[in-house]
Amino acid sequence: MENKFIMQMEPWFGEEEKQAMSQYMDEGGWLTEFKKTQEFEEQICKYTGAKYCVAVNNGTISLTLAALACGIEAGDEVIVPNYTMIATPNSIKMFGAQPVFVDVEAETLCLNIDLVRAAITEKTKAIMLVTANGRYPKAGIDAFVKLAEDNNLMLIEDSAQSLGSFYPDGRHIGTVGNVGSFSFSAPKVISTGQGGVIITNDDQIADKLRRLKDFGRSGGGNDIHDSIGYNFKFTELQAVIGVEQMKKLQWRVERKKEILTLYKKQLAGVKEVQFFDQDLDCTTPWFIDIFAEDRENLQIFLKEKQIGARIMYPPINKQMAYQIPGEHPVSELVGQKGLWLPSASQLTDEQISFICLNIKNFYEKSY
Image 1 (cartoon, rainbow, N blue to C red):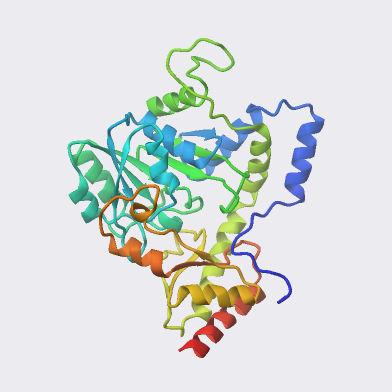
Image 2 (cartoon, rainbow, N blue to C red):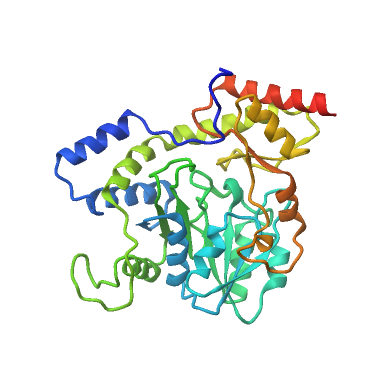
């Protein structure tokens, strides 16, 4: 086992995806989105309970179109967490809206609702709530819904990391705000290589989304354009893979929960490692995320033992791409101590024990 490098994360495609793609090609498919895409969208609707699902080419564009369909325009302010993948603010920056960075909760890394409330101005038009690693904020989703309604704001759920995660009342994450967005890039619980979907229960938003992704066409395949739109369509090859991946989702959800439980059990006595609050009854961890003391040296040590680990997202406001003044203690702490441990669904119990043993060995030697 020690000779095989344990990746921090890797996708998992099998014989089922291979056979499905071969069968599709043998049937003379055109590859552009059609019936398989509709089947994939229907699977997402059934699993999440959403009324509508719109597939697009990636998870960043899904956020962009979600914002546009919610009426966000250039110059509008959108509150986003300072801890998130940079796609979250970039998705609105793309069309001239302005992200306003707010710090997150130390326990969940989701938006701190008190700081969100304080950041609202006359220019604020939306809150983009990122459910980090499938977790929901301590205040609860209904508190964010009320805050948005009280201030006439749209609530966009960036649920890129949250497929398979539910709120305590049984609603799937992403279905409660005006619109929700999921990503299917390579590291996600299920993957189509790239790709994303937007879900909503709003008839008008769903109609806008379908037009926005397809040149503003008034109907499929025609060249009558009632509104401005673009080309952000899915492909049938992605959908063929996605359909097979969805069949495996529930097993992966359960396995991800088992993996986190094993990590927490085996690292329970290591005071230098801190886990975040994860409701395993309702939510599914995408990655195994921790605060780790002496993070850089731990990462080097693990790599020497053929174990991959990845530094978590640094505070966005201090990245060169943004350079916006402001102190955000929790997201800055993530930048100093946040680490993702190996998290793939296909990890074995033996591999997890090997990883944990080496983490314990590192701290025993270092401290």
